[in-house]
Each structure stands twice: as structure tokens, then as C-alpha cells.
Image 1 (cartoon, rainbow, N blue to C red):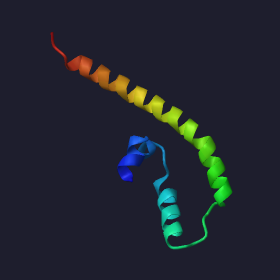
Image 2 (image 1 turned 120 degrees about the vertical axis):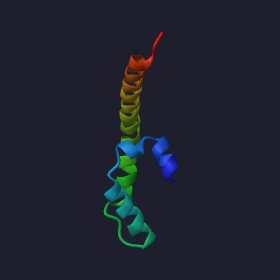
Image 3 (image 1 turned 45 degrees about the vertical axis):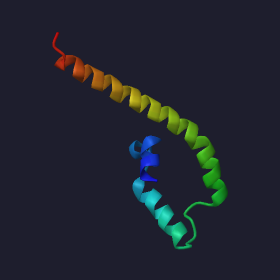
Image 4 (image 1 turned 180 degrees about the vertical axis):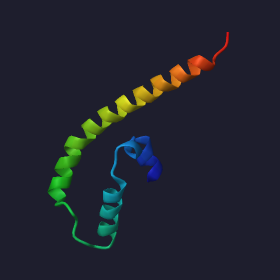
Length: 75
């Protein structure tokens, strides 16, 4: 599960305290902090925004990586 979340870029954008509390509450049968319908609505909106944010973060990291390695290459 952790690798899947990381592959999707959630390791860079998620509030882990809230995420883990939600999982814990669900496993213990406690009432969710948010109603199910609002969670579904949020995910429908959040996923495309999240994908775009991760795409930008990856592009920035890639550019930084290439710039750093350009300085190391000797011809």
C-alpha cells in the first residue's frame, strides 16, 4: 500500500496524520471525520489536481537532477 501511494506521489502531498487517523477510525469502526459522500466528491475533484501537482513536482525534481549532474559531467 505504501509503495502504491508513493508511486502516485502521495508521499509529497498528503497529510499523513489525517490519513492515518482515517484508516485507524475505519478499522476500529469509529465514525469518520468526513461523511462518505463528501469523501467521494473530494476524491473526484482531488485526483486530477493531485496528478497535475505531482507532474509539476516530478518535472522540477527532474530538472534539478539534470542540472546537478550537468555540473558533474566531464568531457
